[in-house]
Image (cartoon, rainbow, N blue to C red; front, side, top):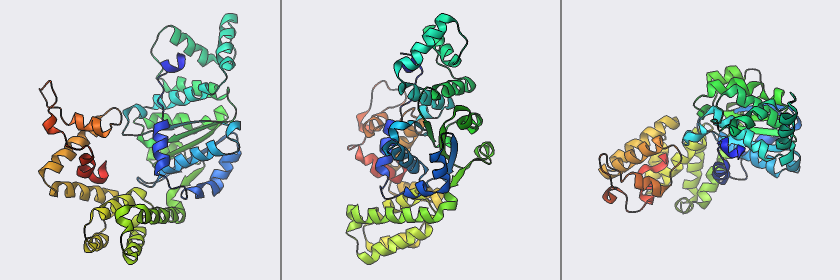
Length: 372
């Protein structure tokens, strides 16, 4: 009852989606870096993985989670993880991050290890450990709102970490948390104060760099060779398994691989957008033209996708605009059916207008292209 009142956010579904996107042959290099090996050997350590947008940080985070869960020592350590995701409003609050991690650790405790201890301390009025958890218990019993103060939530997380064996925390995409500047200061010394291992991923924003200054770091920019190998594996797998790409002549496949590798600059997302564009081509010459005019970076890629949507006509343009607005404003991720229903809403009308929806929900994917 108390744990439910804490209003935690489950990131299990997000993890499953991320791990399905990962090629099992990619990302293994991180486990052989000096920084990761040092972090993994200690009971008290911090590691920050940073990189530019679209470089696969979330996919690498999912690989670290799977590595910990699948290792021979999985039963000897206690893992809690959180994926910040700008597409899901519930995951963009610093308070939600700390509350959710605390709840995960408490759920891994034996029931008597903390609840009974709290009751005994309350009955004896003893001022011992678990002071913040005792306060939390009283707040919930008094039907107060769940806590949002970051300092207090950090104390709860520290206390919860003392109740489990070898706690390990992972926070992905820290920069996608709306109030991350308030959170980073609480994280910088958390590993040392709570005697745990903390793994954080995110962009190298100024606030984060300042807070994590001099702390162990893995920069994807400095791991260009390993990233290029992973992108090579990804492109090769797509050329082999995607139906339209697999039918292309060997020489054209080779050209696709070489040109995408040359301009990828460590961005998996950029590569996938180009592969989507190539798959939409109907002639070999169109593929060659696309490869000769590859966009520079993600922003130019997105500009071209939006321009292509407009050029396809009024219908696709309206569908894409409506869907993107709904996705940007939704408090949680939407399914295609939910998104289609949302597009049927008309301002000032009390009923849905089915004529505004698409005939087949998959038409939304066609209209929006790589943006969805």
